Amino acid sequence: MNGYIDLWVRIDYSVLLEYIDVIRNMGYHAICVEGLDKRITRVKGVWVIRRKTIAGSSEKDVKEKLRGIKQEYPVVVVKPLGIQAARLVARDNRVDAVLLDRDSLYYIDKTQATMMKRHSKPLEVPVNTLFSVGDRVRAMMYRRIHLFYQYNVPVIYSSSATSWNEILHPKAIVSIVKTLAGVNGKSVLLSITDYPRALLLRNGVRV
Image 1 (cartoon, rainbow, N blue to C red):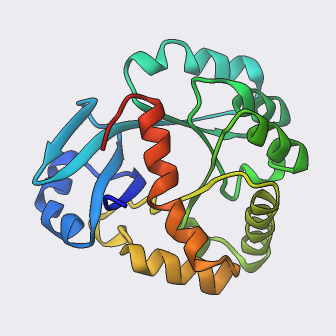
Image 2 (image 1 turned 180 degrees about the vertical axis):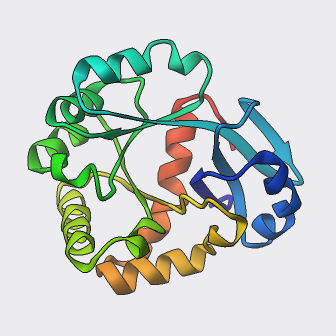
């Protein structure tokens, strides 16, 4: 294990630079940043990688948004907002992961898990989202998470931080998911180390 990876941070680069020491001291080796200008850079020992998150409700909509996207973004994650979109992103090799949140959970089911396993597509769960939804939605998200573990589909946990203090310490992520969702701690650890690293390596990003 070469350090932890946060697959989704939504913080301006200028702000990020102010807190890069804090991020490094937490043990993060790499972070993927929404809207970053550069594809890949390294700041004080932390790899900072450009990421794009898109949402779409139809196959046509998602295909249009994916056109040429890999030339600009090393990491592409899609939030499906419809069944057609969900089925497409499960098999499209331009998509690195499928996002689970309050909007997409209705389209992520057993069929989706089966397809994502077949195409080696991980599920991404933004941990901070678990605090912003109601009990009913949170319980539904937990059921989806356990479904993917049952189907042996890799699950990646990210912070989805919009401010520096929302970047979660890796130990906090393990504790939160283990306590709230009942997921084995070793499995959570893989979700913030080996699984996101394998995703980056598939895209030629060696961290």
